[in-house]
Length: 176
Ligand code: FES
Ligand code: FES
Image (tube, rainbow, N blue to C red; front, side, top):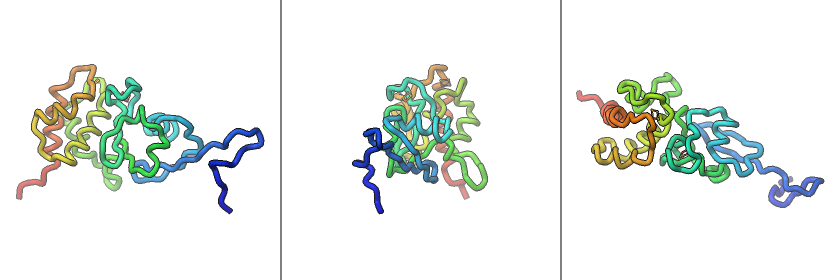
């Protein structure tokens, strides 16, 4: 028999917690009681995916960026329940699951030392992955424009620009 979760009441009269299913990095996760928690809180606090960082909590800095259906999204302001039915990718899901090889964007940031403290790195990498998926050879102006809402307090902007350009190069098929 199917239980109507929206109307069933506990003996105390309170509505029971609503479970939630999330598709994260190709795996299905059942979250028992998401309540009003943000997607970032569920990813970090429940699923242990601590790549996305808490910075401002106000969609201003980009540290918490994840991909939702391929587009960058600020997980600090999205309620977890709103992410149900969508494909979520965190930075933990970028590496090749078979070989463990880093995603070209991760490799490029490593090669170019695109971070100092690294706190912004998650957002820079995830935003770059989405950018290169839709524009494999972006101009410097485009890179600057796309990353202008990802804040780096360390001032690693030159290295970040170089990292994105190297990532675009690494993604291109090798010349025959
Ligand atoms: S923590 Fe989400 S944008 Fe700053
Ligand atoms: S490397 Fe420290 S905030 Fe960007």
